[in-house]
Length: 460
Picture 1 (cartoon, rainbow, N blue to C red):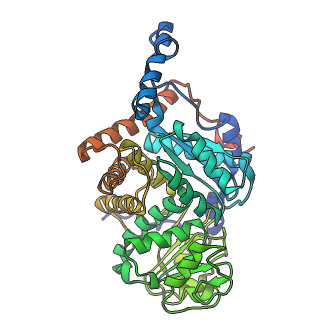
Picture 2 (spheres, one colour):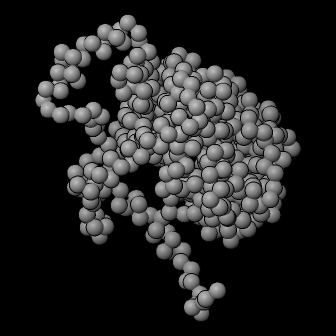
Picture 3 (cartoon, rainbow, N blue to C red):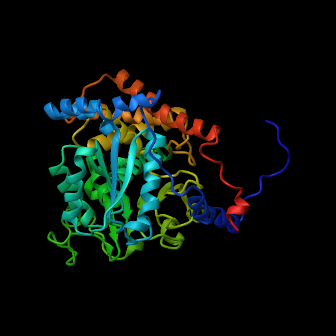
């Protein structure tokens, strides 16, 4: 092996901090430059103005009559088969909290952009001026005829659990809450490969979940469904470790957290957050943005070959280099500018691609597990190591595979209206996703989507 004789310089903490802050500094100017992130484009050919007689009046009356006679034909004669509504009330946006429906729009537009580019899904941001859970569910019911699926987003806990469950009962299309199911999917995928690297059995290890919001509550349920012993999971909220003796927890106020309090934490640990780190094999944090939410000395108290997922946005609960210095072997965050990004973007575009392609009626936890296992398998096949445990968004080939895994599980569980073979599903997903990516690239090449100004100009 050749060597230059020079050691690679390690970045300073100041340089790493500057890198972490840069996307937020560029974002306002970039958003203003493009005046938003998504637009509606035709799917059909327009050879001349006479074609509008087919696409609109008088020709359009014929497909209308066909759908009236057989409503399920709407999925064949319109784009409903590929439409997803991204629905939010803006009450828990990223790490920003209750910022309202207008301020939530940039996030929902970003979600729609990722849906299209990564999954070929046409998604529409729908921010509601209500905080009432029943009104949110009713809004989903009212718009159901236009969509093939509903993606709930950034709705505060515990309301989000009720909205998801009620909407799933009332609607005949898949309803999913990305902050719950999406986060749980990608966390599970990351843990599968992290445990392979450290050589431990995840289903027998101790796992602490810091934060008992939508993400970690669903993560706990998904981990249990996957096979982790409930008693080996320790949950921590703002008041400390969750255990069956906590008098402040009630079935009426928060039935999901109450239920988990009865079945997790078999050791009966009590006390503050620091007590939840001692001797555990993995910590998954989805809590208060840091840095400093998790302290180095707590990580030092974990078991050997510790796994730490610090997933808060926009700043992780602890900087990755601090976690490594404290003894963690594998560290993941929610950020794209650090190694091992645990990001929902690896989940929801492909999962919806899969459920839309078989016209599934719902998204189950088993479908999320199938998606997680395919994510982990893809990364393992191309090679994993301590700083590379998950697929990256640019590895677009993972998305058709994940879509197929989810679609096949839909068929297996009897919630799919359309049954296709593995090969048919794969070829369909590849074609749709490639079309979305290549369409964007063509628009950029032709200058119809402009290149942004230089960074130094944007940062002025």
